[in-house]
Image (spheres, rainbow, N blue to C red):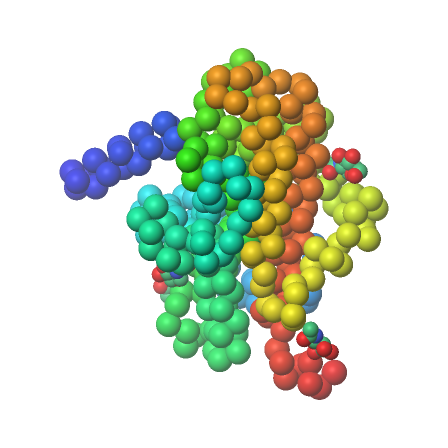
Amino acid sequence: MNRSRLWLTWVELVFLVLIPGILGWGKEGHYATCKIAEGYLTEEALAAVKRLLPDSAEGDLASVCSWPDEIRFHYRWSSALHYVDTPDFRCNYEFHRDCHDSYGHKGRCVTAAIYNYTSQLSKGYQDSILESKYNLTEALMFLSHFIGDVHQPLHVGFVGDLGGNSIIVRWYRRKTNLHHVWDTMIIESALKTFYNKDLTNMIQALQQNLSNAWINDVPSWENCANNHTVCPNPYASESISLACKFAYRNATPGSTLGDEYFLSRLPVVEKRLAQAGVRLAATLNRIFTSQAKIAQA
Ligand SMILES: *[C@@H]1O[C@H](CO)[C@@H](O)[C@H](O)[C@H]1NC(C)=O
Ligand SMILES: *[C@@H]1O[C@H](CO)[C@@H](O)[C@H](O)[C@H]1NC(C)=O
Ligand SMILES: *[C@@H]1O[C@H](CO)[C@@H](O)[C@H](O)[C@H]1NC(C)=O
Ligand SMILES: *[C@@H]1O[C@H](CO)[C@@H](O)[C@H](O)[C@H]1NC(C)=O
Ligand SMILES: [Zn+2]
């Protein structure tokens, strides 16, 4: 085995262990979002998605929605595309001000990445998928993942605390950081406490709400202003607003977060997972609609 390759793997592992929070919604969150999206795809979009999925997905979009986290240290350039940082305590987001990486390179952030992969897929679908100069299988997996990430409030958190990554807290008795609480811990605790440790039960509860309590909200979630194909900016604005109202509140460094925090924040997390799923589907439906068919109809 190549020695330098082994070393890189080791560094990657250390990174993964030391900074667990930088990965975005955990595997469960991304799976739930993409599973919900599957239920809202039109026939045409579903067929296009299935054609683009890698064989390993066995036709299931949700199974590859964490792929960008798995390759993040291999495709180093993609690392900044999972989030966007906003100025400390402003509690708002502006594309032109905030969308850059930590070196100041413009357009290296999650909202720009969502535009990027949407336009690759739209263009590829209108021309011919085979002729695209981009790998549209990767574009689909990136887009599905990043629409999830932009809904995680602390993926649009403050720059000074790295979206909560540097805020060390206890989640019940376990030492972790605030970002990780929002990516993973709230969902894991919910699975244990309310869903018999089964993600399928949680997804079903979200789908229930989508067809009852939230049914009148769904059309406004799906809507993109001015007939745009995709609109990540309002999602990012919602996220930083929720971060200020719910994530950062009463979660100062060194605090212990327990039942009170868990029970009041879980509904926020659940709604964000559902919104992300609905909006991912709406976006894919707009991308994979042939203009010719609209004209014929
Ligand atoms: C756009 O996609 C290409 C292909 O994956 C990638 O090289 C580039 O960094 C992406 N840019 C953004 C802002 O997402
Ligand atoms: C596209 O990307 C996928 C995932 O990285 C890879 O397995 C596949 O070989 C790529 N396809 C081409 C034509 O490069
Ligand atoms: C369903 O909606 C109700 C009312 O908004 C909310 O209290 C509850 O937490 C939601 N459940 C899930 C699983 O999202
Ligand atoms: C959006 O598209 C519909 C149908 O193509 C059109 O009737 C409507 O005027 C458009 N709205 C805007 C704001 O462009
Ligand atoms: Zn991510």
